[in-house]
Every structure is written in C-alpha cells, then in structure tokens.
Image (cartoon, rainbow, N blue to C red; front, side, top):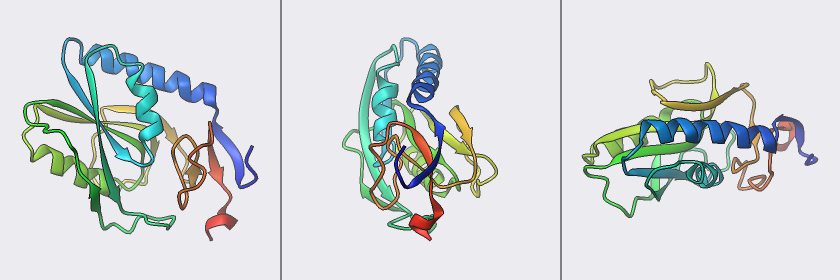
Length: 178
C-alpha cells in the first residue's frame, strides 16, 4: 500500500469484478446498437479502458477534459471544458463514463451540454458514487459501487495529478491535502 493511503477501499480484483458486471449490463442494454463511450479525462480513462473491453457490442470512444477541481480537494463548482469531443454525437447513443460522482455539478454540466448536441440518448456510468454528496440531480444508469465520503485515489483517481497509477482505490491521508 502506498505510504499516503490510509486504507484500501476496493482491491484490484474487486474493481475488475465490478467493471465486468457493469459491462455485462451495458452489453445487454445496448445489444445490436452502436455505442459511443465518452470518458471524462483524466480520472476516468483507466475505468473506461477496462469497461470498453467488457462490452460486447459496437463501441467507439472519445474524450472530454473538464476542470472543476484544479489542485484542490473540493470542486470549485465552476466547470471549464478543456478538451471537447472530436466526434459528432448527433443521432448516436452516448454513455458518459465517469470515475466518481460526488457533487454532480460537473456531470450535470457535461450531460446537459451533450444532450444539446442531438444524440439519440445520453446515459451515465460511474464507477463510484459518494452517497449523500450530490448537489445536482443526476441519474446514473450504471453505478459500480457506493463509496464513503472520503478523498479517494487510485485506479485513475488523483490528487494534484498523483496516485492515478495505483491498481486499487484507497483513502488518501488527509495530511496530504490539508
């Protein structure tokens, strides 16, 4: 375990099982349909990569990068699009792939923005849901698991661009970001 992580919430094996289950449900729901996965960079790239390999239907991927955190531990609430999609989503089924849903402010902004572009559907898959933290009404069709209201890192999740490479999801020691 990394020295800055106080405990592991989800092991590499547990994450793999969660992702496999999510992929099976997505495959069932989108059978015989083309699906565009939109990863919210940078945190969700690891999750989307693993999730895409578990989906048994036509899948394409694209990426958006938005910022609402910067180097802080809490969202600022101000969302900026840093990198937009390269693909048109008009007339397509879109699945936003998010690493963690906490306040929901960023995800609400992204969802509203994408829905304005004329897709057939826009749904959300999140690996983690911080239950009780939502400040925006967001419907997630696919939720991997609920996590406690603690600052988590690993499996793509970061603090100040560090810890993304950890194979598990763990709780970051508050002394690191206090």
